Image 1 (cartoon, rainbow, N blue to C red):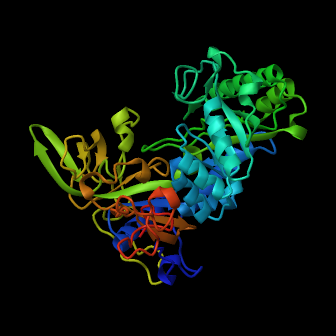
Image 2 (image 1 turned 90 degrees about the horizontal axis):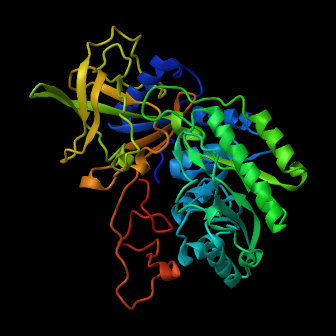
Image 3 (image 1 turned 135 degrees about the vertical axis):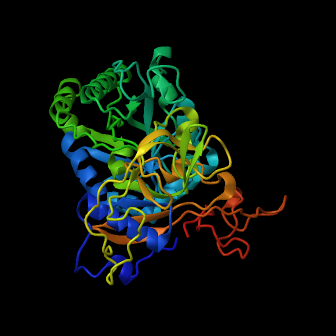
Length: 483
């Protein structure tokens, strides 16, 4: 990873900084001048505030995990480590990101279906000891690999409960699902959950995601608490850890503010007191979130390369498409995006950086540019590369800079970065209006050992040694690197 920590990028601690919406836009335009378009900008101050807000909404002494699938960028993960969060990971790549951000393996909660023996060995060797397992069979796999290393893994059994039936967000459990043990199919005997190398110490719930309705979110959490109490009584196995999951919402690729969930702490605490008496003294209570913690920190800045007419439709062709944002659209999970013009005195002008790296002179925003309904499309050679079919806030001229808000979660790494072999967008982190670092993901092909040869690094993984002269674009674990 190459990160820009130059004095001009970081600033000197004096002089103007970007504050307020217009100043943020001037900063974004300055960053385009320095790093090119398109680029993601992540505001680390927003990440810190989100962690503070969510912690204030949860019962006291709760442990808050950050789900790296939302965005594994090392600066975001490092900021959340400083804010007191722990990493929730689902792959060895996310494990590498957590370790690079300063976490220890022992800090991680490793979950997800389909864990292979190879990745379990790698995680255990890195010090991971807490796993969420999806079934008794998954528990046995974790136990076998831990036992082979002379270790004991702490395991949470993920539960596919009946839920509260809240009609909010995307349901993760409550019906047929690859996630969790389905309690409607019967409960395993305690003997099935007694495995050498694995200690069943708790339960894991994650019934839904992106629930803007606080009452629906509360109902699901209380239903999970009741189920946990019933399972504890059924098995006679005292819980030492209870992960109630997340579901905390944030707008995506459209203007809006994340909810604050002021009404959660007291009723959640009361439900725990009622159903799991003494929980404060005996139970580690955990929650997890991805989009809420980083979603509103990010904006994608892109440029209109051409405006054209075709049979009564106006198209704004951008230099960014579904390869940079929108990879989840193929499964129907992407709403229509909202790209808005940057608020600059001259929208098509990109101001030069100031002498200390602060935003250059952009002045106050000028009159709003004339707008009309425009279909926003990307540069890819496919009719699927549609960002928005009916945007109304796009200045109809080439060269204009647009911003897609609230894309700090499920942005670059949730997109089709390899499609059509275009470069990934730059990713720039800022704090207090000044650049902390800048990098981009780079995908490169990696030569594999010839059949019958022993890999130089990584045992059975087939990874090449990090000093292999044919492989200059891999991290020490052999994964695509940031450059």
